[in-house]
Length: 278
Image 1: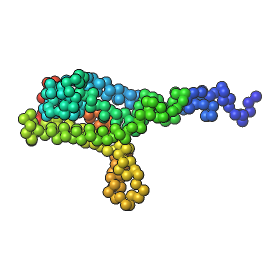
Image 2: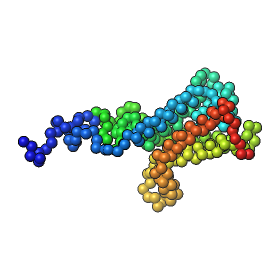
Image 3: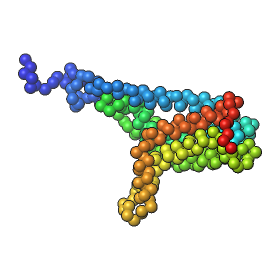
């Protein structure tokens, strides 16, 4: 007869697998959370899938990505000769006529790699897709946790290198934003609604890029004496404050870059004319 002081029957109550092993508390329930914890990962899945579907469609569309003076960030810089046939302006011609697929495939590798390996996005798709774990205090369903020690997740460690590529991409998009102040005759003094859209996007792109954990470490992560490096210390403080908003900046910049591409697409396809302020 149980007296109430005996240890629980771990063999009959413990659900084995993942982190729920015999060394853990013998609780039969998968978790004890009563709130709607699944809303956050579900929202993450919905948001990221929406962007993936849209960006994939636009990347392979290979059309309507240039409307003077706007060029879609998905296609900039235009590195294939075939961009000239789309009247997308000057290009570097690094890829000759043999490049038969959309020029966007060349470009999107770098910002996509930066975001996929970003520390915030790791949390987002680890919880939303990989379910490791799906939420705090909710056990993951995997039988074994290996972290980022095996392929393909070990590739997450190259994030710092994608950061340098992201700086180049942000520089190119800054140049494109400056060019939105020119009209179709390449004269300065133009400003349309698209110019405003581009300006908002580039501010968010730079804020997201510079708030990256890798940027924070590069600026002053290895310093032993902040007092000997006051400029780098102040830069580190600024980036640290931005880093606290890295999640919000990640989502805002993700949708802003899609909005810019959508705006260029609508103008280039003739859906409406770009409203001009002057």
